[in-house]
Image (cartoon, rainbow, N blue to C red; front, top):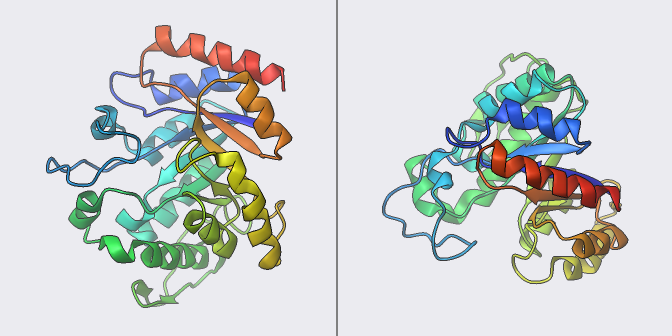
Length: 280
């Protein structure tokens, strides 16, 4: 089972390129950065993680710039978006950013995507909350066309562009793995329908491991295998027993969350996680 690390990179946390070096040195498989463009002060949308939204949601760095910084100081670790809010992003620019980081890392990008929860944040980008998942699928389909065709065009209901040209193309063929974040059953259905992996957040919506048998049944019904859509459990705590349970349940990857703190707080946690990793 693969083990990764995620952190909100901010101006007061360990910096992304420094974190990347330490993560790679300890033998982790991947490093993931989340994103929020901003947080509207109205705060009408409830945060799924609890009553109080942590400050670092307001403060996080640009995701692709942080990943680019991590790419140029590492050689082996995968670099993930956890998650990229594609419903708030222009698909043409995002396709270029994905391909650029995949090039800078020589084919190490993992493209985690999600629809998001903050309706006010989306509204500022012109995105309607109720149709965000339809928009997400069309933007992903459009980006696939950009990555795989020399003269792509796309004509959906919500995303449209005439024939054009864009380089660079990703190193990974046909494109970096697309991993859908979200719970069961909706997030799982989206992963089965058009992605290369499913990434629920550990502990949200109940026992994550109990969702795996119905997810596998969903894959079988769709004619896909778990090798086609492996499972990543995202943002979990560093617990050895839980790690072994995930391994025994057939989870492909677990991603530990560490706080956006300085080296003195983060490095001991990386050491703890590496010790747990050696036991599985």
